[in-house]
Image 1 (cartoon, rainbow, N blue to C red):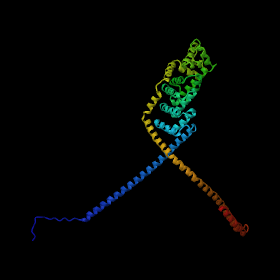
Image 2 (image 1 turned 90 degrees about the vertical axis):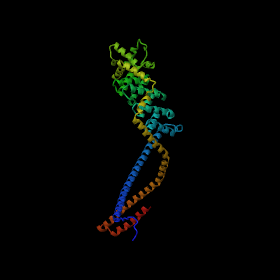
Image 3 (image 1 turned 120 degrees about the vertical axis):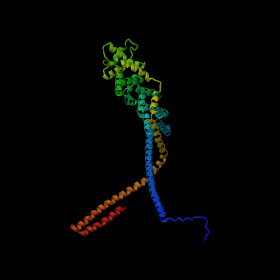
Image 4 (image 1 turned 180 degrees about the vertical axis):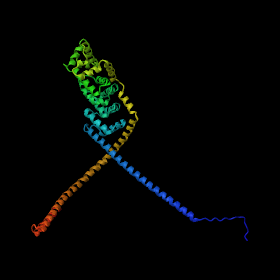
Length: 440
């Protein structure tokens, strides 16, 4: 009998079959879940790949469109400049910098450069003057609620009407923005109607400051800018043309004053404000029991005279003083507009677009080579296709004739019209001749 050692031994038995089944089931669930995740991730990967590929194609197309549009614009500008003296690459870079600075489309900026040179040929040689004009016009456009082309055009047309150089652009643009500020109009509106009055004003010696003050006064009274310029033009034309009712009345009204013996042009050359000149007529009219409308032959001229005399005379004087301000009113107006969130975002987006243009400029030489290569390859291909089409036409013609001949053969054979033997003999040489034609 074994000696007891004080230990108790327990024996535990379990059913391994159930444990194995549970493990198999767990493994299957893991594999099933893994399969689902694998399929899901694969689908996500494919979706991301398709999305990225699609966006890449869209980006490439956008780069091509923006790059070629700017390239076309610069090519257009090059037709007006002496490319032997003007570095077109450097000019293009300057335009891109200006585009990013003000959030302006680069191709539109190139178009404005072209129009500016068209209006003033000297700018085709003076690229510094061109860029300075476009820079100030960009600020005027933003402050004047219009586009660059309108702002530039309004400036240059006024300079041309008065025979001034681009160094006077700053003064002209201040008057434009002050006309907007003191009247009820915008630089955009003025840009489309100023030519109604500036040629006459320049011919009569009426300063642009006086023109701006008059338009501001008239529009503030409710006259639209287009009508105001037309009325003002009629006023100056009647006062300045010899023998008109207004010019004769002015000469009479000036008698006994410091302006005695002076014509309208003499007075404007002496710097007499427009409202003071018309004021002489007003005094004469009151003295003779007439109205201002009686002093002019046209109702349009009379309306302009009424607007800047009487109660409007003081407003005109204040507006005329505003036109001669030394304050950078254009820059101040621009800063107010440029500080908005939309303008900041616009500048950022424009910078991004310009990166695309610069990328196109970098790869365009390679693209040009590939296009030339494609043209070289396509020449022989087109020639070969043409040869094939010619031969195909011959073949089609032969088949048509052959079908006709066969039809005629069987018609004669079964229809009894002529000898079948004779028809068959005619058909054989026809086939031989047609075959030789195709091969040749």
